[in-house]
Length: 111
Length: 120
Image (cartoon, rainbow over all chains, first blue to last red; front, side, top):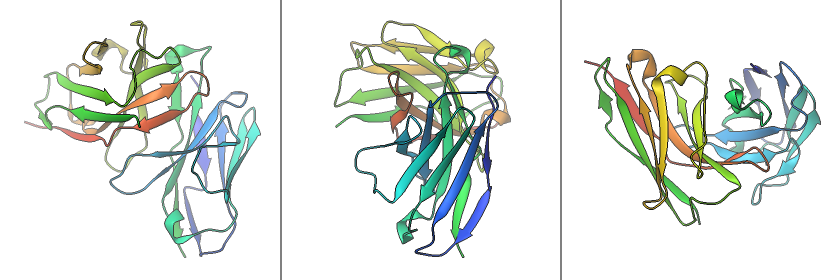
């Protein structure tokens, strides 16, 4: 099965900081990676899909990169609304018994 | 605008069956380009994919839950359902239903989620 890891698990930052979160897959997933933002008590919100495509309506300060096994989500200038948990998710169409696997999440907190 | 809403009991007794229904509004559940699926999040933990179904009836389940899970779809009612048998306290979680894109491999939107507690 495909395992997803993220680093760091917690990130302390200030408004205006550039923030980068890394997601790694245990085997190559090409560009089949999505990123989500989740706030307490709320459903996750899709930010990015196919590693680097910004979902409609998501601010352009969010960007994604990577392919294969290593991916990054970058927030260019952290805003007050961005303090949340971010997690990645892989999609495996060729191995449907592991269709979706999620990373454990990275909490972005106020420094 | 597509909207998904989970419904079902918030408390289930150990060893019994957890049953949830997701009602879809705002779009067709028959769209070929999507799976309809269930994801759960135990308290304080990350997300776990439970399984997915296509409108044709094809199903895919997480191997760790496969022996206990059944997902079905009723296109006439625009609903899909989850049944998880022989539940234990470890199945306590917020359960989300969601639309899952085959083309881009992303999950969007998610329902609001419903907390199911397994306890006697």
